[in-house]
Amino acid sequence: MTETTVRPMSDHEQAGEIVRRARRIATVAHAGQKDRAGLCYIDHPRRVATALGHMGWRDEVIAVAWLHDVVEDTPVTLGVLGWLGMPQVVLDAVAAITHHRGETNRTYWGRVRENPLALTVKLADIADNTRPERLALLDKVTRVRLIAKYTRAVAALSEPTEGACDRGPCHLPRGHEGCCNPGGDVIQAEGGAR
Image (cartoon, rainbow, N blue to C red; front, top):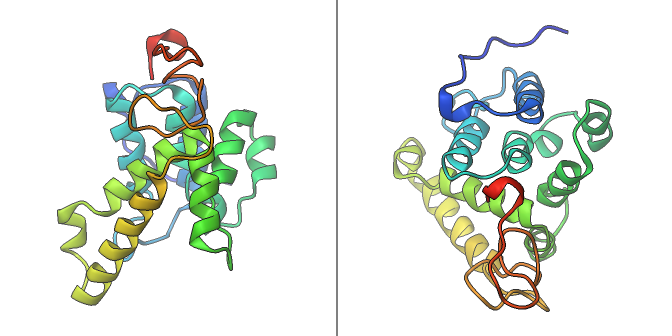
């Protein structure tokens, strides 16, 4: 198997091995795929990963950004991702962000909300999919449908869950890394990055 040629990573895209491995996996898995506008599909996960990198998210989040559509839209499975060295935290988030055929949006959005990495990536995914310059490439019917879909998704993903953090907009389980501990103090993820 040969790897598709990928443009060199800029300074802000430089990251650890987990991100490089996720980028390679996504690039090979999405090779030849086009998005709704007919553009190379891999550019979408690249933009999501780059945006999260600019915001200072840790490597595991950026790896999930690269892989967020791999299991849903390619033959690659979670088992293969594990075999290729993705850590369990990444596998759990990719599992949470994968929308299964026949699954209701309510079930899907609830699962995404429960996983902090999946939620972070899903919101960045929606932000990329709703960029005005991206939407302008679509026909009006598709554009209107997607705007309504993503508006509903953001609203559902913003609903607090049982026992959710009550300090700030995250609505993640109380005490999760990068937000609030059970005492209500903001804590930082390892290394000071989000």
